[in-house]
Image (cartoon, rainbow, N blue to C red):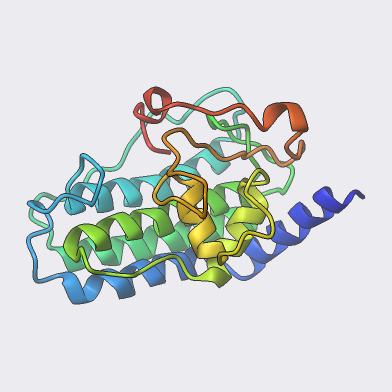
Length: 232
């Protein structure tokens, strides 16, 4: 087993055994709950075109969707369904739903056959990969929402959660950077500059569990046009 393959295997085990996607959702709930007195429908989620409310609905849908992709087990298709929220729900109910959907994804991923593969535009992925994707969405969109609600906030993804995500989905992330995993994850997802590297306008992750990133594919970036289809 190569070093890269061993690293992915160890990361997969941590993602599933420790139910880290639930921890990522808990971090989101803890960060947003103190800000729930604001009108989330009218506040933009930092640099996104969505409101905080719409971003949280999207995040809930992502977690459900990733669980469904694992169960669908098709390497060539998406499930033809999306979640929608009760228009009368308050922010606390959306946060409660987030916890439920994170637990759903964690349970489905842990119970699934590790050899199962589900379709994703960033590479057909295994259950642990989809759990990691749920963590990316939870951590990055928490940053978006918190910054939208509090411009002075210094919140960033916790290093102990960002690290496993980087190892599993971002093999092209800079190693030995003079920054913690939380900062590196924000940089890899186009949120902040890092050192002398400017903020990324094009970014992606690699979900394929079988093929660690090759040198020739490191230059392949997916542009905003593709990401705009749906921020899976």
